[in-house]
Amino acid sequence: MRELIAALAGNAGLLLAMAVLYDALGFRGGRQPPIRRELGNGFLLGTIGVAVMLFSFQLAPGVVFDTRSVVLSLGGLFFGAIPALGAGVITGTFRLAMGGPGTAMGVAVILVSVAIGVAWRYVRRPRLEALSLGELYIFGIVVHLGMLACTVFLPRAIRLTTLMTIVAPVLVIYPIVTALGGWVLRSGHERRLGDQARKRVTEILESMTDGFIALDRDWHVTYVNANGAELFGRKPAELLGKRIWAELPADAVQHFRRHYEEAMREGKPVFFEHYHAPWDRWFENRVFPSPNGLSIFFHEITDSKRAEEAASRLNEAVARQAKELEARVAERTRELEQRTAEAERLNRAMLNLLEDLKAEQRHTREITRRLEISNRELETFAYSVSHDLRAPLRAIDGFSEALAEELGSGLNERQKDSLDRIRAAAQRMGGMIDDLLKLSRATRVEMRRQRVDLSELAHAVLDELREGDPGRPVEIEVPPGLTAEGDPQLLRLVLQNLIGNAWKFTAPRPRARIELGRLEGGIFYVRDNGVGFDMKYADKLFGAFQRLHRQEEFPGTGIGLATVQRIVLRHGGRVWAEAEPGRGATFFFSLGEVGGG
Image 1 (tube, rainbow, N blue to C red):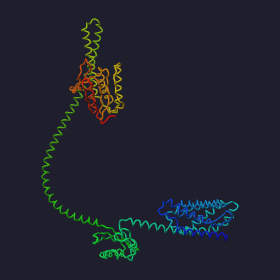
Image 2 (image 1 turned 120 degrees about the horizontal axis):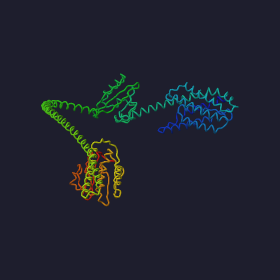
Image 3 (image 1 turned 180 degrees about the vertical axis):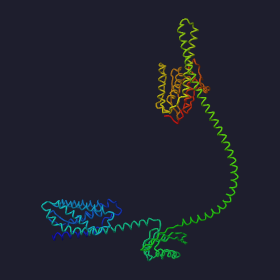
Image 4 (image 1 turned 135 degrees about the horizontal axis):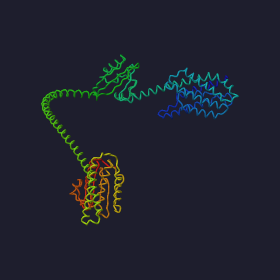
């Protein structure tokens, strides 16, 4: 037992010596990345752990005891998980290399020591510098109770004997060593915190644009930043330890002394400005007293003072101009009063004019309303007349056909020709009535705007025309995807009339061609290579019953283009044509939108 205590005490002494050495030479890392600094600390801790393991006490072959638990637990407490784990890996590797029946316990002690140290750090991390010697002693007891618990990993034959042998030395010597080693590291930690705080304060003071100087209570300079020394025309090292009165300009000493002594005497901050005539510069001084002396911040305010002087001169000039302005305002006020009276007279005249305009607008709205009623009545009348004419026309056509069949061969050629003329006229009249009904419908039907595929409508119209004239070759060009916003039924009627006209007026051509297309700006067109027409008659194109070709050449009623115009106008667009006799025609129309699909 005496040998065990002596060996453990010697090992503990070695550890404490190395702890002091580590605190003096430990890996600080400087500007190194945090992970590199932590790995460096882990390496140093692991090296210390291996060193104490080299001087361990061998209780039995392969069963050794040393202070590695102190090294690793304090490493986890003061340096964190990464350094402690790094040291654990190093010492664990070394313990495995040592071998023996105590290897499992040795590795377990390493793991338990790291775990307890890191866990205690997690609880106390915000206030490590507040660790007391008593708390460090309790920490040592907890760590080494864990160490004693690891004896369960020893072989059964030596477990109890080993535990009974080491329990007293471990619980007496190790916690004391842990507390002392922790106190050394805590003092170093506290010192490093102070150094870091002073470094941060120095960095802040040196980064300031203000000059800063610190004085002790005997008026000696204890610190001055670079900007402050520059204002004195000296280097910081040249001012340290000097009495401030010897460094200030002679003409300013009394002024500064009065304010500095007031701050020192009253223990309250003092703020004052000073003009240094030789430099023609202004400075602002802020003096803050403390138990150790004064902290003085000063910076140049020449620009702001000159700005104040300029503002003062400007205010005086403004005051003079204000008086002149008051006189001009009084004169202008009289003129404005006169003009206001004139404006009031004009205003009354304008009000009277507005009343007249409102009356005229009411009269215009009434005329518009009557015109709308009249148009609806005319449309209704046209629809009724067209509808009522159908029955007598059908009767004329039917009776003429019956009369021709009944008389048969009893009719001479002149009589047959007369009956044929009667039937043809009735049928033509019926077509005109149908077209009139379409024109009326184009005006009266409620519009249902939606996205319409004009390409699809055009193909449907062309299919109907081919069924009516199946043997005729016509070259068709309708690109896919021509879409527009509008009423699908009314737009179908537009294409029926325009494509139908193109079909009809290309009949004399051996190679007829019809094209539907779209230009920029949402303008569509139907082009053909038919007989065309003379543009001097273009004003008749869109009038009802207006025709540019004889009935015998090209049958029709003259209603189709009038219907097209009505539909296009209802869509907010316009329709027009370009043609040349014998060289075809092109009809253009828009539907009141910026662009087509």
